[in-house]
Amino acid sequence: MGRGGLTDAEWARLRPFLPVSNGRCGRWRDHRQVIDGILHRVRTGVQWRDLPERFGPWKTVYERHRLWSADGTWERLLQQVQAEADAVGEIDWDISVDSTVVGAHQHAAGARTDPPPAPASKGAAKAEHQDETPWQSLHGRLVEVVLETRAWAARGAVSPAEST
Image (cartoon, rainbow, N blue to C red):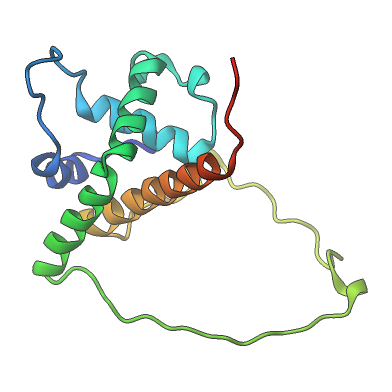
């Protein structure tokens, strides 16, 4: 597992929900490797062509993400993971909505009063999802992908058609 990839516990929870190959199109590349590539892309914003080689061919990762975005697989995965986590009581559905609006003077924007914090050493950084259960961290990762997918679809809906 590379930095930001699925942990073994997250993979064990996600694996039963993943689609299987229908056999007509040949074998699919390993789902875990491809999903790790998609998560890396969502987390870093890197261009598809610049994905590190450890995720396999960038075109494979892109095509799987495009296919799963178009057919609703990401949405379905999120719903299934939420339902399973809710069944074992690992999702807290309490939310807080605050509609407070605070106005500030235009000259108050962006002024620094303290120096920026010193960068932490590499070894002192806390793991990204250390305090979360596998369900919570997997849920958070899928939410990121689904939100990126929705934004991608929204951008495509408003962009003008290309002519060749």
